[in-house]
Image 1: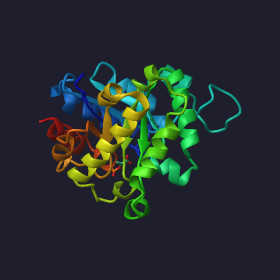
Image 2: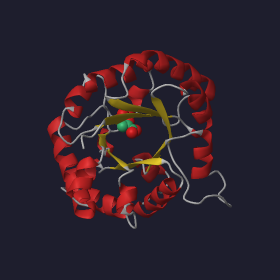
Image 3: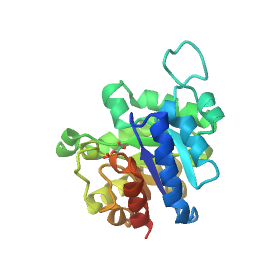
Length: 255
Ligand code: PEP
């Protein structure tokens, strides 16, 4: 089965609901000529802007995702949001284990796994983020770190559920820094990730898994990155915050 390119914008803690509506209106216009047969596109605004995004993007080819999910369905977890709450809004995707959550909010492989279980239970499509720090890369630990993150994330996840998961490989040193992994370097790492997935779920399932690249992807480099055999799209931060750059990035990636 050929993998479809999937490009998602992670808006992080940017855009109020009113600003979200404006950006979504611009995206709706720009993306009208992009066929969903060639690429899956999603935007992931902050929780308070999800409703505005869903309302604006209804009936378009642009999907909406959240940036986090709690592992419980409800209960005494002040400030958290459950899968059922996201699902009721009409959210389709959810980012799990972004490096900023790992770095600033105590996310671990274990909590990534719990959130992944909850997302699947709620019928959301998870985008599981993995990636090494600069220190880990320079110390020759990239593969060991990624393998540990993958194995930790997928504890107790069965083969059927695995098919619903997207992976985002995001080298931490490339996020928001303007430094991008070279296409060759990213390809080598994506191939390694697919090998680890094959060890867990078999070669066929690993072949079908969408693995996005994230880390300073922009209109100027999306074509070369997505042209790599094992790179199936991108998770985009900065370049997703403007309709023009997000559109150009997607258009170049598939063009
Ligand atoms: C991200 O935060 O997921 C990301 C890839 O950010 P940027 O594109 O800005 O590097």
